[in-house]
Amino acid sequence: MQLRNRLLSVVLLSRPQLLGVALLAAAVAVPTIAHAADAVGAFKAKHEAVVKLVKDNADDAKLQAEVDSLLDYDWIATQSLGGADNFANVCGGRCDEFEALLSQLIRENYLRMVRKAEKHPVEYVGQVEGKNGAYKVTTKIKVDKNGREQTVVVEYVMNHLPDGKWQVRDIITDEVSLAKTYRYEFNKIAKGEGIDGIISKLEDKLQKLDAGT
Image 1 (tube, one colour):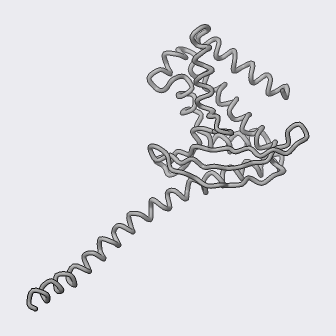
Image 2 (cartoon, helix red, strand yellow; image 1 turned 180 degrees about the horizontal axis):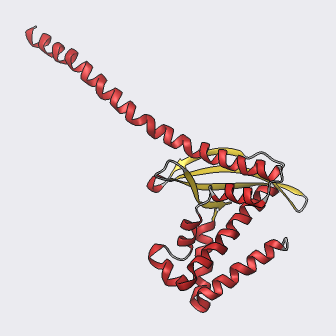
Image 3 (cartoon, one colour; image 1 turned 90 degrees about the vertical axis):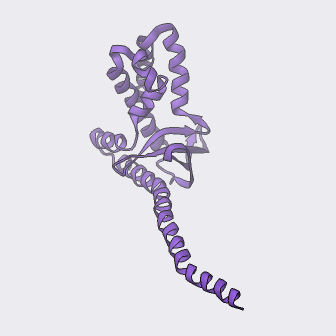
């Protein structure tokens, strides 16, 4: 009986400690949940702001400022040339020119996609956590192509910055990664034509966009 009472006393005395541990664990878990929820919320807020500007026929400066705050051009440019260790070796003295042209191309393609789908609301499907604190936000949009309505799955890889903001580091359209596509394409060009060939290719792509092709 004495042994049973001692064991009961230990259990009862431990309960506050266990409760404290449980509360501490819950407190630690809450920021993680809020952090995850912010990825979708942050993207939705920025994307909807761009959509509104497009619908309001905002000037180019306002559109560019809004899109540029959402997309991480620097990271995409670096990855497209093989990563930080390889970037400067490929672009040499034309790194700034390369990044400016690639940023313009990414921005214009993003706005082009928004304009194609501006009649249809974006469906925010959900998110999954990836490596190094990044989150993949999955969306669906409907676009009119060749007289038919099509549903396109677009995933945005969101990175959480130290200042609390979120930026898109990759755009995956129907399972095709933008960063990986550029990396594959630029690597082939660099082997034969170097950075001059890559910049020529970017200029050609931009001319075709301007021509509406």
